[in-house]
Length: 461
Image 1 (tube, helix red, strand yellow):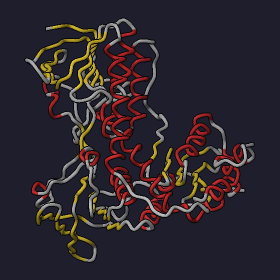
Image 2: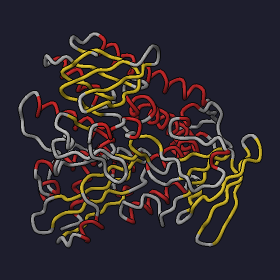
Image 3: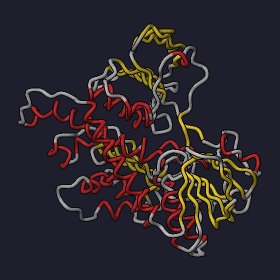
Image 4: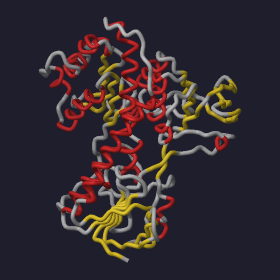
């Protein structure tokens, strides 16, 4: 049994930088990774999907070029080449990170699945060889989440359904892709494969897709997807799947208007994700979980058991790569630099990479209303943005919720090309306490998307 100063379980966007920084600070550190270095984001999340989204956007633009005076007689989609390009970027990132870890003094790397034996001891079942045990003064869990597989769909286990991971392995286009779930993953994959050439139907249990966003945001995204001939069935539920043969599936869907049957070739399950805590045997440690299996932590990301920390998706809360990375910075600076930082009240920006993308930060209009705030809303269609007109893509809008008394920005939603970048400008204003009237009269380079923030806040004059 080998002892370490620190053990990091999982090499996601918190675990990867944390293990290197702990080792560089002089702590003898062990990183345990069950699968691939980089976690979900690098291997089957952000990196490959956004690479494929970029390919899908080129297919979309190829179909629009004639409108801008560039004639393209025709184009084809080579899904194998799309996949090859994405895999190349994934491998470069994964292999580069692993090579850097293997060269880091004080850092050991082992591939295998970790389970707890007690508060300070883990057992690792490696891919080859016998299980080994390790102890540490401090243990950091960054084991992430996995796809939720619904248990109430009759016949789901009889069809070769897809997840966000197995979707990336397809080399032939689905004829008709049925997407179960109308949030980020389902919408991104749905639009992507529609642009590649598949027929797509999205089924969402809630009354609308993106039900946690403001209604106008949800409606705008739905409109944009439907303009690309994507069928959206909201307030609907897949209740049965029947396999009729290879790539021949009949889905029974309960809708507000009664049951309907549709035929599809592939099914993508995208109703959400759940923490990978079950196999960690945390009951051996006394670490507390919530009712959904997420690890409970305090504002400094420590569990109820001193010396055990949880970072990233596995602790619940916002499930974004950048939040996982920020968790690492909080833990490292507190432990090594002796700061007193907290995750409480941190700003949480995020992007959904449909095209156009949705950039979001802060509270929604609905949340401002529910909180009884004295607020105002500024809204500007992208059709009134000079840069959008010039580049030929006026889909979407900018929206900001502001405090009517202090003039501070409370929340932002931007649907549009570079929506995440525009949102980030306003996020910086929020973090810096810059009021909307300062932006309204600010000087921005012309012609940029951000320049139209002048016009956005002019709506409040």
